[in-house]
Image 1 (tube, rainbow, N blue to C red):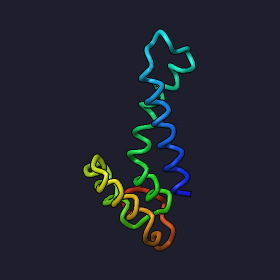
Image 2: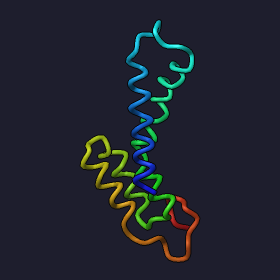
Image 3: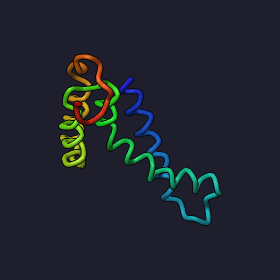
Length: 102
């Protein structure tokens, strides 16, 4: 499922970015909405490792989020964060999915 989410979001970013490259006079209203959706889709791709760690209730959620935010701009940091988020086991006792343990 993670690969499907990555593929979907990357495809959304590419389509939105390519629609934004067209001159405004050559784009209808729907094309403009798609082009502006780039500003929603790009941060979603960037923060996907943090979401995956939260969704899986990962023990190192805060650390993964920090690596994602501060090193995610490099491809290596983003890949490390997504691999770390997908590896490992969830918290013992389920947890509430928050950043800090209570």
